[in-house]
Length: 74
Image: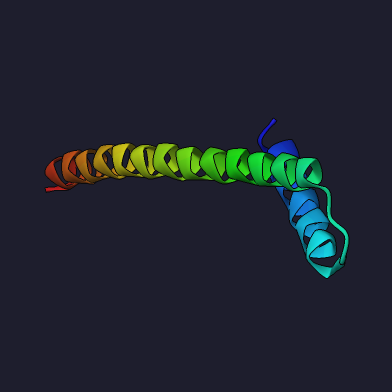
């Protein structure tokens, strides 16, 4: 599901660039693109936070495993 959100965000980015080039823009089109891009950015922020938490968790586990291994090797 995550990759689809990234693809959707990329498509919205391209739509936004095209809208900026147009001279006659409808307000509804702009609202849709802004809303969609905002949702995509929030999704990426949440994903980044979750990944950071998981990385910290796994680094802690690795550190504990290394310490345990060092005790056994001595």
